Length: 133
Length: 133
DNA sequence: CTGACTGCAAACGTTTTGCACGGTA
DNA sequence: TACCGTGCAAAACGTTTGCAGTCAG
Image 1: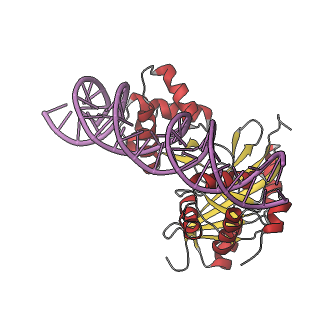
Image 2: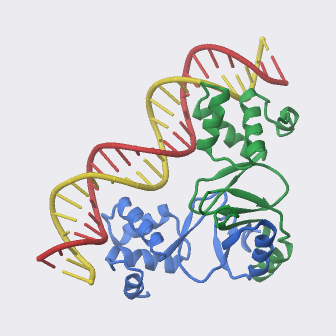
Image 3: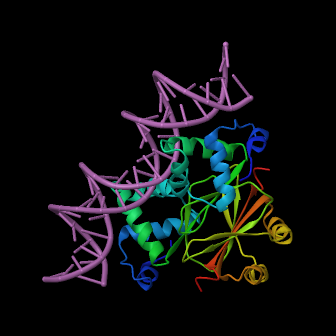
């Protein structure tokens, strides 16, 4: 169980017990949707409000402490901000996995052929995980 | 103004005037969100219901006539189904552009290092378009 | 002619807001 | 202590559903 107090403060967020628990949950599970996060949080804070979850998720995104991952045919999940990476999603069990890939050359290719100034590349692979094949 | 009657039928969809207009709108604009689509449709059908838009969008997705594109920090947009391609999104004006890139080698790389069986790769670049730079 | 589609209104689930209280720094 | 965060309730929002009438095939 990591201590995220300093990390939260570094992102200009007060380290409340609820926020620490959100951080710990995302750290532990990697990727969590709102509904599951609420269920998990209820175990530690039996009167936590969904409003608190939403408010914290939103401010944590604004302050770049966490990030939303939009996934085809599924609810968005949230993860702690880390180095840029891509995602694999299992169509069957919904599992989300990180993968670090070098997208620099393909990004340059895209930039040159479109005159876009590219800042970010979000790549999500869909398919079947090892267990579901 | 394309005639999408046969195309709709090929996807097992009845060619109603409302559906033809949705197809034409997506063809004309490339990528449209629900709200804008509703506004545009209202010009041709002054009593069209949002429910009709949603029902059609959903059945058209189920029948693979159109596809949803999920975009960071923006509402989803919809496009006619075409060959696999990636997207560029302007963070400033919201414009969405298609780009065809070969993702086969990067997909294989991802598949091999994770034991996933990959079926699809959704790639969205974010940045600034030529006009907004 | 028949099943599918449309438009309307109501219902639904998700997310946001306002407020009084409580806790962090 | 002062401000920010929390929990509650209500409101707002986006999307779906049921139904009666209409239309495409």
